[in-house]
Length: 369
Image (cartoon, one colour):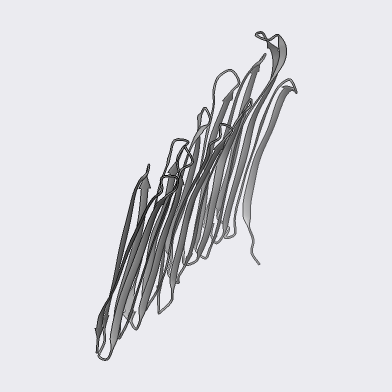
């Protein structure tokens, strides 16, 4: 029987009426399957001075324990006002709102934890701003983690939606660390910044496979026609007597441009055969919706009494400056026959500019009898 330990906090405030009123809502909820520590806090304030509305909302939550953890939060600030537009002498209605939302889910066979921190502000005669950040971490042999968060802003006929999410899946038989951070911030005037970072490690011994897959994604839309989409993925698998794989996926995007990188390093070796496969992928866009895609992959294998393999694949793209890097190495030693081989390939592609490059290198070496 599994017992979850959790807590929930919520607020629901309202004042005024449909033509001159405010609402402040928020909820934070978390739980941990191993009886760990769970915190949930949500605060809201509102001031109504005739047609002037000033609203604030804050969320905080955390989980820390063993096994599985979840953490969810959502808040909303809303202002409704009506009056007379003096320029055209007709009644006018103004609707303003900012919503923050996020959730983290961690499945693990070790330690796990998550945190949430959010702050939003709305002044119907001033500015609207807000930020939400979430983090998830695990120290375990098996890990399956996701983090999603975002902001939605409505300002009259203008709207902005920004969402960041990250994911990590790792398998092995040794406890290793993994973490995801996702921060989303509304900068005003339809612009937002999304930063997502996923770091992880998997390791095994006793001829068990280690595998790791990391993802970082960001999406930004507004009613001015912006449709910014950013994706980073790094993954790999390694086999051998002793194996270890480490990686990172990262994106940083706003309405002007997007940046990102993908990195994966897989190592294996010991008695008997070894092999490793690594790959990375980036899909980014700029303010004109021009896409920049890049992929890289490498593989390596060795057979013999004693073997060692290593495969590293890296992609980076900062405001259109793209680079690829591949390193593959294999060695083998045997009283009888042994062999080692390595291969890699990389592709850079930019749509609308029709620039295309492909890099490939293949090598086979180390055969002996």
